[in-house]
Amino acid sequence: MTRSPLRRLFFSVLRRVLYFWVRSETINQSAFTLKLDRSKPVFYVLQQPSLSDLAVLDAECSKAGLPRPVADVAVGEHVEPAAFFFLNPATSWFGRRTRLVAPPTLVRLVGALE
Image 1 (cartoon, rainbow, N blue to C red):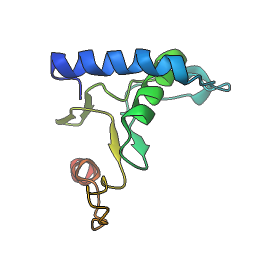
Image 2 (tube, one colour):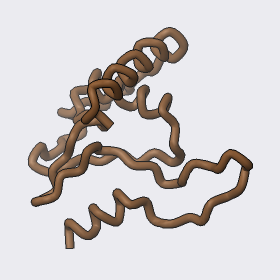
Image 3 (cartoon, one colour):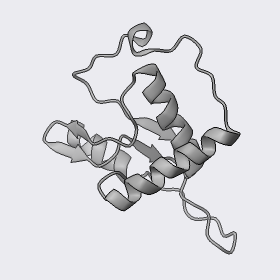
């Protein structure tokens, strides 16, 4: 997600525009209260492809001091370009349901851990 400067610019503008409409509140969830081990990777799973959900998640993680979902993550020898993935694929333009399969990122992560 963040490899291209144009994508980073677009995502940054989207976050700022969403700030006018979306106000979110984090309830006692900081990096310290969650007791995260910084040596282990953190991945975020979103149910469906939504750029607005991703932008809000990124803003909340930044506020709480948690790892950002759009940052690169190293899992052993493997580096993922982002720390998030979507469980369900995007719907087609004609409303057809696509077959549910495991997300490619999840498959790569499981393979890297085996």
